[in-house]
Image (cartoon, rainbow, N blue to C red; front, side, top):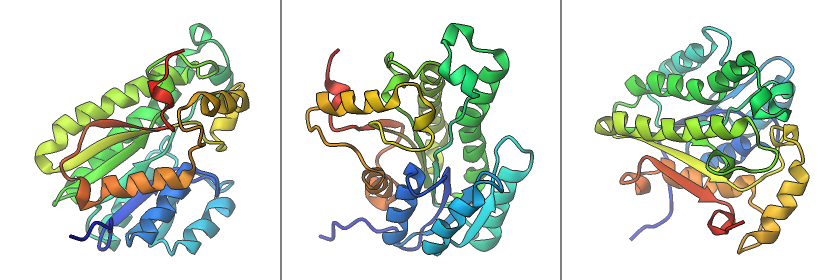
Length: 258
């Protein structure tokens, strides 16, 4: 029996590449190597010079700007996918943002504006992607997003993003329940700490990185390629009986007590 994961014939959208260290890039790279065609987005003109060479290296079907806070940009990506492919088989939502003042301050001091922005970019954008994907996933598909253990327990320095990621994880379960009859699967991948540009905005992140892998049973830092391999499996037909899962990829750290 053939056991190799293949994404041949599948079309996937990758949201959230910022540079070569991005988790989204690791996912895009592995999915492309598994045979998928991908469409890649970048945040804005400032980000484009970092993202476009990576997307071209991966021979992306299209490369488009997508700031989910700007009306019409997300919809334009799905319109392009419909025009270019006629379908979408999977997508990765690797978007999270909060204003720096709110991100690094105490949750109790967070602003209403900062909370709205964090929830819109980090959570509601995934809901909008699911809505736009539904008519393009006529034969089913897979929606993937990213979280962290701080969405379930208090992690030093994670602050506002803890309750935001908790909301994202619960959103995944509800979307899975609602879209299951369309054979659209929805998962949250929860990797251990990885030094990405987004992570660098968190206070004391380097200390957290060292502490986690010192305590994790395997002591092995997770890489963006590790996340890519898991994402490729979940997007493949090998995982059609799975949905609504929160899947840890953290060298076992999540099983350890304080």
